[in-house]
Image (tube, rainbow, N blue to C red; front, side, top):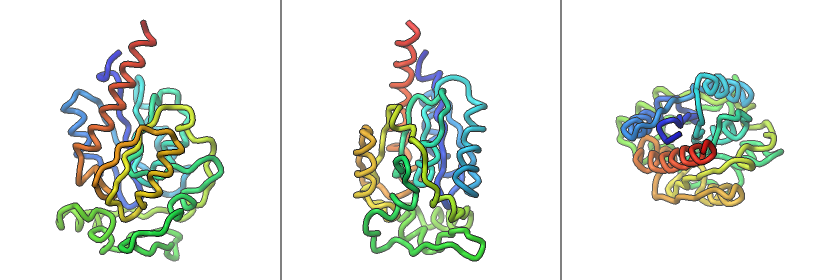
Length: 237
């Protein structure tokens, strides 16, 4: 068993889709790591967990599960035994009984953070200007415009549901703290990473480092993949 036998399953956050992981998928594949993005409907937390688990059903062998932003709650809610470890990329990691909203609003928001609220359909959309102002300020103007044009709204109910016992209590975890994040304050990220006892990597990146600093994200996932492969090899001896 080696890192070539480990698959990275990547879960996107709100206002994005699986294509947000394209650069990381490419980077992992150059290192011989299989990677697949799980398409989340963002219609409810239960729907998103179910969608992630359908993706996991298609994967053979051990998995390193990676989540960005809202998807931190999703990856922490799966009990699939194939999951060897978890990687949180500027992600929300509610503890048992907490909601996504509890941790998202834990600290004072960044001055450039958008004001969020549901529309008449109970969907939360990101204002177009927020993609350049807070969501991905380090991206190119073309990338920011594309993100705004293709955003997927998040059901407001998804952030109000208390989670069960999170998987990070039982599995090794990594956390990439985005120091320049204007959506989830770095203070909040450090708090969550600390109580998870995660291996913390702190970098001067924005909220969407998969797009704006893909090598840094690839590196932390690669680290988790290598360790998962080594652990599996050791257990098979």
